[in-house]
Amino acid sequence: MRTNAQLRAAQAMNSGSMSIRESIQRYQGITGGVAALVIVGATVWIYSSSRSGSEQQLLTTRTFYTVDEGKTWFVEDAERVPPFDHNGQSAVRVRLFQGKDGKPFAGYLERYTPDAAKRLEAAKRGDYAAAGIPQGRPMLSLAEEMAISGTEVKKPGPNNPWVRRADLQAARAILEVRTSDGQSAEPVMP
Image (cartoon, rainbow, N blue to C red; front, top):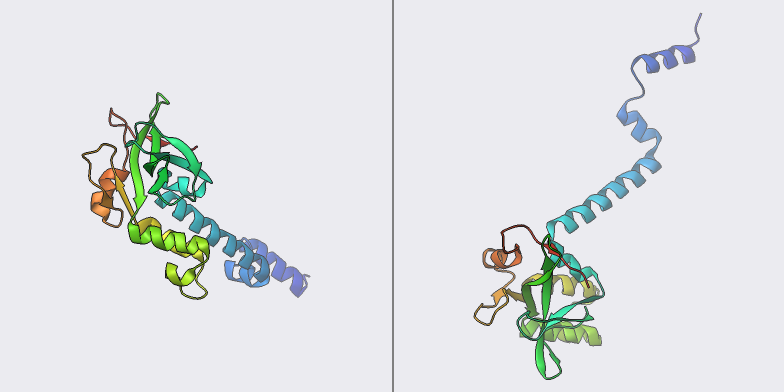
């Protein structure tokens, strides 16, 4: 004859295993940790996949700049606030891409609006009041805000207009970079 414990074990084996709810309750600490990891992982994945590859260049410490509409470029610290003076010329960020041939080309140019540049420079100096950062707000949140609302983008070439990145419809046509044969282009990192 079976004991109560043996009967419960047999029932558990017959039902496949304990229910999900019982597992979660039994292993609360582990379940919480796994849930937190899943949430953080999903957040990072959503954030990185929602940004174009060229925007991911913001995560590097160096980036490309140009003074001649993307015909040539140079590498400089990514914390520079374009436009800035470079040997007497106005430098802006240039986002480089490549097709299957591996040859880099300027996909689009990028700069901060005068107000955004002023706020970012003030924040870099630690003048949070001039930067418009409320007490306790991290500077990174200002940089993220300015990356959208405080930047302008344009296709290379002197006749192409600057467009506010916040104007999603106009900016989308600029930010979706394709090769000359219409294929999707890959970002180039410094």
